[in-house]
Each structure stands twice: as C-alpha cells, then as structure tokens.
Length: 200
Image (cartoon, rainbow, N blue to C red; front, side, top):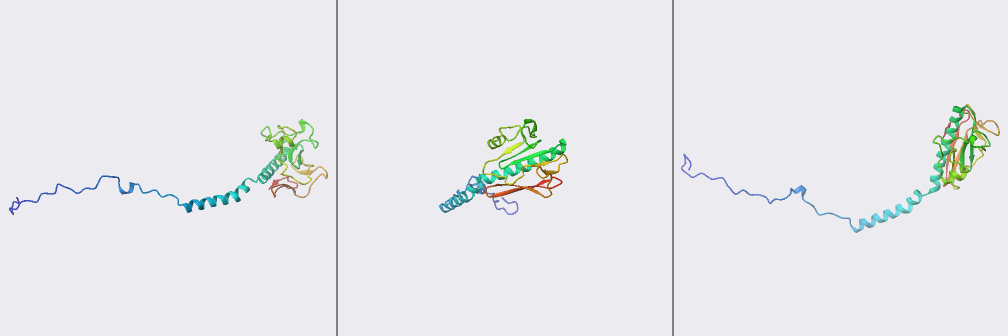
C-alpha cells in the first residue's frame, strides 16, 4: 500500500516479451544465387573466341624460337668481346645460318681452339648438338631450321682490344647487324665499330 495514498502499489511486470532464439540477422543464410543459362552460354562463346584467336598465337613456336635464338646470339657475341679483352687474344665469332659459336682460331678445327662456356657446357639441346658437331662443352648454340641468320658475317672476330673486324677485309667501319629471322619476325643484333658494343 502507498504510505500517503492508501492505494496498493503497482507491481513491475514479471513476464518480459522475448524474441525467438536464433542467429543474428546478419549471420542468417541467404538463398544462393547461381548463373543463368544465358550467362553460361555467353561465357562459353567468349572462351571459344579466345581459343580461336589467342591459342594459335600463343603456340606459334617459330616466333618463340627466333626470339630465343636472338637472345643467344646477342649473349654469345657480348661474351666473345669480353673474352678477347680478358685473355688478350682474338676471339672469332663463327656464325652459320643455324648456329653461333666462339673460337680462338678462324678454322675452329680442334678442341683447343673452341671456347668453353662460362657454365661449363652449352644448352645441350637437340638442335645445338646437331649444329655444333655433338660438342657439349663448347660455347656453341644452334636452333631449328625454321630460324635463320642471313648475312655474310662468317669471318667476324674481336681483336685483343675488343674491337670488331672482318677477317676478309681486316676492319669494319660501319655497324654490323645480325638479323635473326623466324615466324615472320626479325630480331636484329647490332655490333658497333671500334668499340665492339653489342646492342639490340
């Protein structure tokens, strides 16, 4: 009872409203949404177009071989110039239509005249062994018949100062360009006169 009013006091409610137990709204699973038939057909059409136009280009082996051969030619010619300076002796760059090699003599006809690769052996690929007489410990690399290196640079060498010369004429006063060709592309490697600087 109220002390001043004489009326009974209101009791607080004992039955509280409550929510049903369960995970919060943000954690409840929503219905998974899949792809429609139109979307799947569109993806198949796009994949087919990519397969038609991109795969042939991706697997065009001739272009890949030509680029790889041009990298080998540039690397071997650079090494030949540095080797001539380091050993104070001429280094001959033997260039054929399907191979490039380094020798210490123009004829390159004995094991002693063949330069050893920095890694101890060449790539050992089938084309390399065929073009280099089966020698694995000679700085010589070959490439498939689909890749060619036209031009008459067979007598090209570096003197002990690293300057480039033609064996036939005894000098060269203009830039020598070695163009590796394959897959409809050409990849030129240039050798500067006097300095022997090799660049692409």
